[in-house]
Amino acid sequence: MSVSSTSSSRYALQVHRVIRESPSVATICFERPSGFRYSAGQYVTVFFDDTGVSEGKAYSLSSHPDDIDLSITVKKVGLFSGKLHTLKAGDVVEISPAYGMFNAFGTAPLVALAAGVGIAPIYSIICHEVFRGSNRPIRLIYTNTVDEEIVFQDELDRLTQYAPQLEIQYIVTRQEDSDYFGPRMQGAEIARAFPDRAVCICGTVEFVRDLRRQLTLAGISDDDIMTEVFFKTSGVAG
Ligand SMILES: Cc1cc2nc3c(=O)[nH]c(=O)nc-3n(C[C@H](O)[C@H](O)[C@H](O)COP(=O)(O)OP(=O)(O)OC[C@H]3O[C@@H](n4cnc5c(N)ncnc54)[C@H](O)[C@@H]3O)c2cc1C
Image (cartoon, rainbow, N blue to C red; front, side, top):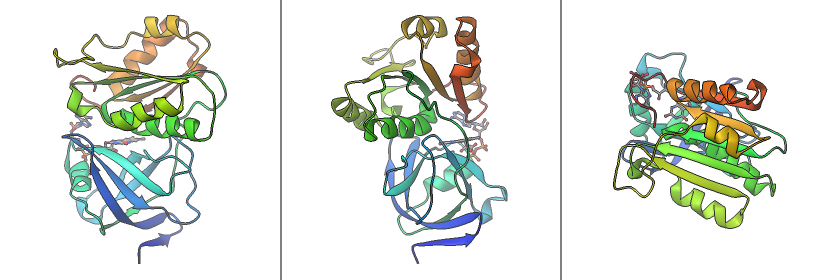
């Protein structure tokens, strides 16, 4: 058995492969069940019987709706994410259908702001826009602590070759010898540089809350800002 539906609300999926993206982040690719539909930016709930978390935990799909496989991209921070990092090809995991509304559909230029593993749903959204042949201008600003934690950098840089409307700015906050070393994102600057845009933000509570507040103070309507929050940390995002 490689794929089966365990009940109307869960799928048992076989892991195809695990890609080590960075010291702390791995992408887990699953066979996609027939009829499994989702929108770019949505998440699934993953269930492990032996973690004591019977309600499971949420993980954004980093694959995009036209991909053959499904994938999630996970930062190892605790028990559940640590267990996901031990998966190997052939293991079987249960997931829910896809949920969520994180995306900025439409034609307005898209500004995507990601911190750390917050790139997962944003990568899905960007791939979907590019592979469906949209000419929508997209600006990704992606912040991490150090170079080696930048996830999907090769894939993103390759996408810019297909899609000249995609521009990417990497920011690295804690490695002074990085080409990308620089100050954190500033909402006022983003609002000035990209008028009439839709904004998607994904990362920790603090990262999303601070940027959202800065953007609305800079005059961007709340209706034009879509957010997805992954975790609460006391430290610095990304
Ligand atoms: C809608 C949604 C989508 C999500 N998508 C993803 C995803 O695509 N990828 C992903 O990795 N996670 C994602 N998460 C978070 C995920 O659901 C878990 O909360 C996460 O994996 C931590 O679970 P854990 O049991 O391993 O650690 P926990 O025991 O819950 O946390 C351990 C400690 O680590 C802290 N912590 C959590 N994250 C970080 C971090 N990034 N940096 C520093 N400290 C941290 C926690 O605050 C806590 O103190 C998503 C959450 C939501 C709500």
